[in-house]
Image (cartoon, rainbow, N blue to C red; front, top):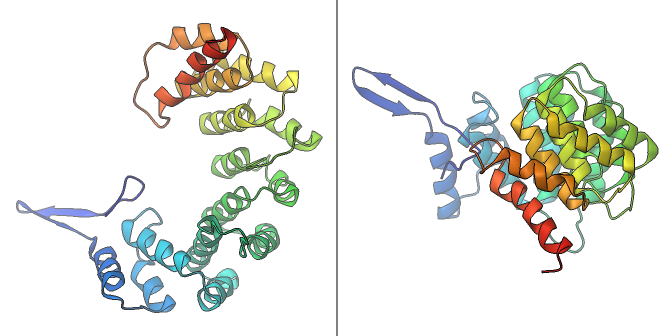
Length: 278
């Protein structure tokens, strides 16, 4: 029930341990029994928890899957709430509503993009701002990239990471805009390891074959962090650059960590397969 992306709290006293996942269990039981808890009730259950708590995740996912105007309007109304926890909850429900909409109409894409573009310059809380930028990064739209650009040099590393990961998402364009390309070059040299890694992943998985981007990825093969090196190997492989082969061999077998290294390092093997016409 909890999933790898969520957590619960545990308290141990006198040999007895208790966990605080009861709110998530209640939400799941109501769904199974066909009981429709209100938006307000579901929100009230989780605001005392962190965003990565399973109770929070169960509530926002359930609300996002409702895809009705009542739920949408309730989440939108939280944009101006004075408490950042409420704004964060509303932002996540809106983001997930669009993210889970796999219909051809994608009715929530346009409204969600408009909301987040308007929201980002007004948000003052770092956690909420990061959620809003993550939401913008899930839209394959040049307006989303333009909104993200304003935060490419933001002092907080988490914000810069959201920008690095969000550029060019799902775009069918053959190249990044000049401004986005320049921003990604800077982000690939960022002091924050996660920012460098995610910027490299964005460039590697993008369609832009500009030599300056390829060389920036190649420079990251010598990065101090293994995960950045792994991202560079995959990026070069996807860009059909021979340097990925020797770099993958130097890294050796996949290691546990944030990245599923086997998938990323296998890109070098797949490049060799293409190169040799096998």
